[in-house]
Image 1 (tube, rainbow, N blue to C red):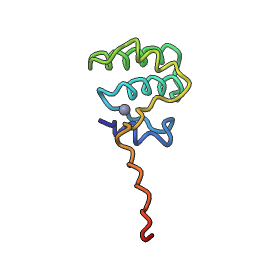
Image 2 (cartoon, rainbow, N blue to C red; image 1 turned 180 degrees about the vertical axis):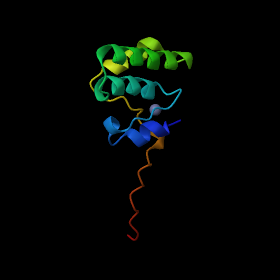
Image 3 (cartoon, rainbow, N blue to C red; image 1 turned 45 degrees about the vertical axis):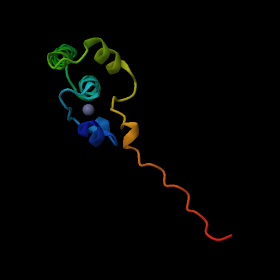
Image 4 (cartoon, rainbow, N blue to C red; image 1 turned 60 degrees about the vertical axis):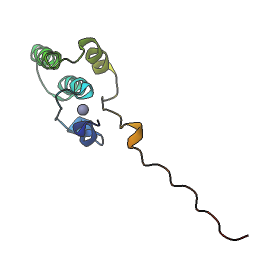
Amino acid sequence: MTCMTCTAARDAPQFHPFFADYCLHCAARRIQYIQRRLNLAPDDKRNRCRAALADAMELGLPEQEIRAMAKLPEWQLQQPAMDAQPASLPAPRKRGR
Ligand SMILES: [Zn+2]
């Protein structure tokens, strides 16, 4: 199941402060957003990150994985599923001899 919030954020995740529950990528991106985009005192920032992580863990998401993902330089976005890609059309058949 593709995450609609990740899909919506794809073009400009740094300007998209919306994060879906139960989505690992959204949880990691939420922490990235707090760290990178919010202009807060360091203490405030740490508390917010901790709260965001606690929210995600309450939903059953893995803490270590979120922490690792949030540290990556790329904004975390769920990649579209492979089977969501349009199948390539078969080459047109030539008629005649
Ligand atoms: Zn998501």
